[in-house]
Length: 178
Ligand SMILES: [Zn+2]
Image (cartoon, rainbow, N blue to C red):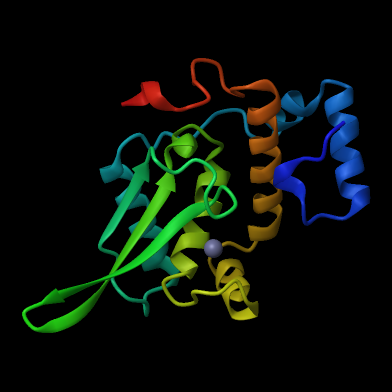
């Protein structure tokens, strides 16, 4: 079986377990048992409110969030997570940082915890641009189960790639939800 693009950084014993789940046809069942339904964030407006609530709860001292959107042009960018942009604009002679978060439209349909993990990841980039120790400390501060959720997200993406949509009624592209 070919290697899984989303599980590259994990130890062999972990990927071996995933390979077994796939071989036994149980990956979808395992995911559905843990995450029976997708989140219900359908619009950019709802996504912005969702991200802002997490930011206000645990990352108050960070720059304001100007925009949070689902972006259909992002497919597998930034290892299938989000895509943070730090666009700078000249406003009234001053250079202002404009913090946007773009989430791949593929995540319009995903387990709630996976969306949370992606949003937490992107929020952490408001403070730390690199994937360094401080960055992951921020992620864990916002979401103590961050690393487990990232692994689960990678399992979800693996399922999507190998078997298509996990949730009935949800296309793999997430295109029919708007
Ligand atoms: Zn990142």
